[in-house]
Length: 78
Ligand code: SF4
Image (tube, rainbow, N blue to C red; front, side, top):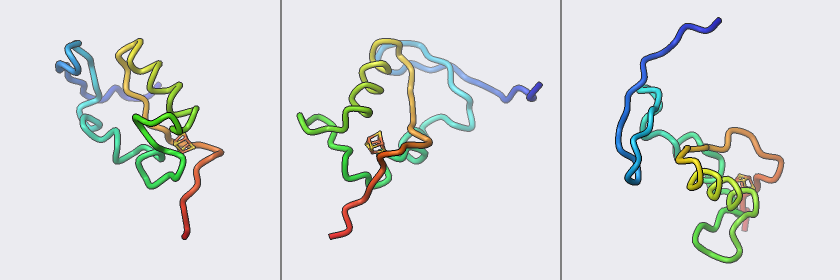
């Protein structure tokens, strides 16, 4: 069994959540969507359907879900 790392609680969008202390505030840094994916267009009708579904789930359950792996990641090379 893995050794447990330290966690902390804080208010996030009005809800108390628990996060591994070492990962707090690093969601975007570790998310493929925020790493220049051409499909990532938050707050628009053309946003990636996977990102939209993940965000909807995050809002519903008050979780934070960075995308570590994705088959559709692509960058605009023009
Ligand atoms: S294709 Fe993958 S990496 Fe790109 S925005 Fe959608 S979920 Fe994120």
